[in-house]
Length: 198
Image (cartoon, rainbow, N blue to C red):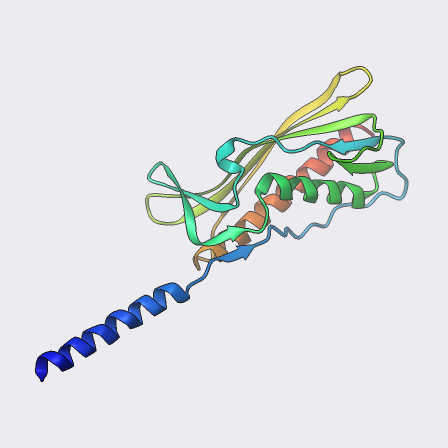
C-alpha cells in the first residue's frame, strides 16, 4: 500500500514538473526604440535609398543572443519578431523619412529612382555578460553614403552604443536595453547624415 501511494505521489510530482516546463512558451519581442528626431521644415532634393543591412550570419537570426564566457547563446524563451538586420533597415528608413531632411527615403527593395544610397553594415548586436553577472547590450553599425552617378563615397562612419541591462527579468530586460541602444545609434546616424548631405 505504501509503495502504491509513493508511486502515485512520485508520478504526480513528476507530471507537475513537466507541465510547468511545457507551459513556458517562447515570447516574441519587437525592437521598438523611442525616437525623437529633429524634423526639418524644408527638405533637400536627394532621394536616399537605405540598402539591406549586411550582417554576419550569426546576427541574421531571430534568436536574442547573449555572450557569456566567450560563447554566444540564445535566450530559450525569447525571440525577435523579425531578424535585427531587417527590422533595423525598416527603423532607419522610417526615422530618416519622418525627419523630412531628404526629398524621399526609400527601402532597398523599392524600384523608385534615387541618387544616394545608405549602406549599413551591422557589426554587433548582442548582450554581453561581465564576470560579476551584470550585463550590457552592444549595438554597432558602420554606414557609408554613396552617390549613385559617380560611385563616390560621400562619407563613412561607425556608430555604436552600449547600454547596461538594468531589468534582469530575462529577455525582456535585454530588449529594453536594445531599444535604448538602437535609439541612440539611429539618432547619431540622423545627425551625421544631415551633415554629410545638407
